[in-house]
Length: 459
Image (cartoon, rainbow, N blue to C red):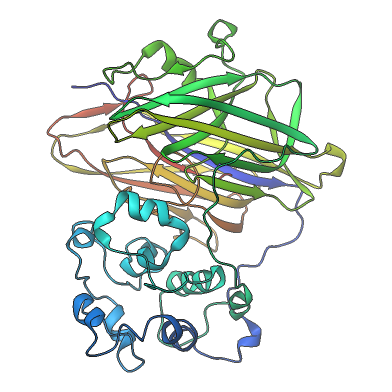
């Protein structure tokens, strides 16, 4: 049995010092009771989709999908797709189960332009992003549709904020280039470095910082050359012995030229604390001015880059990072990362196994953002609130590892959507549903190397 890494963790990005109660109300009071579905039909489908998806057109015949007002809802809701690759991935056109349906929706895959690289890179058999031959849907339209899907995609009722539709910006690809350094902060540069033909290269690289004590980060900008699987920045926890301190400014590859893990370069990862990262070629994320993410980087930042080269020629990887700092005296709300782990369990061979673990928050926290990551054995990963008024509420779900592909952590299995939720001494219940389909019994421990199962609330 081959060696495997396992990192099962929960990381919460939460606020300290908040007194106001965030609102979770999605309903726009100015909507005057108009049905959200009707607005989607009139303002989005009619203007972008109906010309092609109407009876008698070749596009409608090919997709077997009609989106005219008389049949569109019935054509979409709980209907199978006509694409075999999407069928194999257990997608449907659109379900009514809320959050989980978002990530099982072929409709959402086809219109979610910000996931363009994931869509074409991981699912070339899905066809083209829609609308075909027209500009992508605006960011406001996408968020309006997303809120409607999360609310259960009802045919009647107002469940999404119509003011979102005033956002007419659209997804635009950003070409790789060195960004201007931050006025108050740090610019990091990794590379250029080579990725051999038909090879995936992942390494760690310690960069020392000319600073000591706590840093308060208000904004992180990352840009990468194409071909990146992920880029992550780590600090080190207080438990790491000095003898393990890596050599700075040195590429510490995690695999040798034959693809085997280099154990001595993996050991330090057990002492990593996540700081920030992305799978997107470009991100620029910031907190409101009064917030700052507190990190301690007195040993520097360990940079983790992973590139995949599926060509017959050597390719080049390169990363720039801007870390914008803020003076602690300007901070009203401190953002922190809290990490929980589950790292010792068994997957019986040729069985689907469901695991549960409950974590307890000992203090009131405001969770402000989340993402996740999983590898091939994951079938479903969910997070529910346990206890209190929100008992049983599903706040996150990851279906397999192929749908959530927006922001951070490794590969094609990440998502980020802004949450603000109050959890006073609440429990978080995690479910993992895993398939050991390769006929081997798997015992996952922190000393093993293998597949990762992760949820993280962070940026």
